[in-house]
Picture 1 (spheres, rainbow, N blue to C red):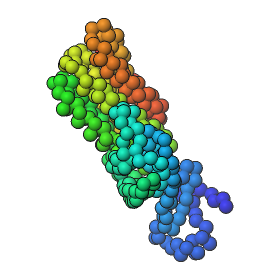
Picture 2 (cartoon, rainbow, N blue to C red; picture 1 turned 135 degrees about the vertical axis):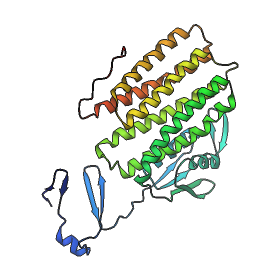
Picture 3 (cartoon, rainbow, N blue to C red; picture 1 turned 90 degrees about the vertical axis):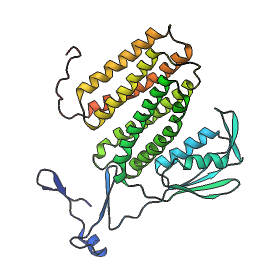
Length: 325
């Protein structure tokens, strides 16, 4: 059935509910109903009955990392129950070149999935279940936490390089795990609840979190390489890495309050980083050069995200200052 929209004031639009439906469900004045957005649809119900999404998968023959990514992807997609079949008690880990017990693989990943518990574990099957109900009220707090953890990861990395202390660099693995946990949780919320403050921005927010997760991985892998350095990294190389920290901090500010001057600074820092790598490539050891080049994509991730934020600006922003000012 079709219903006309009633305009009330400048920003409020109303639509009436069918009287027959209201009578059959005993809906009265002052009662509360559930209104849920599903893409172009709006679902109205007397009380919300959570949809339980179930799936069973077979990970036989997959390596340790592929199994982890598979489970995490289903969690992010919004599945509440995940049944996992496997034919062998272990899976190969390419990085360590060892076989890892299947129980250890699954339990390690479950620890990174907020709300998920192992319901049962048999010789060839495991059942996971999300015992929580993701709420959007947690979203903004967790998203800010992702930014702060990434900044902390980079700051710790830079301090570890300056002091040539591997114990500091090794702590990045733990921080990496927290970012993974929070990123997966926020992506799951977006898939299950959307982005109520502005539904049209759900794709942008999702893409931003996914790219920040790539930043997390890049820092982790670079830290692993840095832990293998036999001597302190060149000061010029460390100074260059601080530009990545500065750009992440700039993007953090831009994400919550757009400022064209910060965008200009980001592009300036990105180009400076690239020029410095060219100047340093004949002066520093290959291992250092590898770290610098492997971290360069972080700058491109942030610039790409800034382009998207720029396109969302509805009104012309104040002209940015000149770099010569």
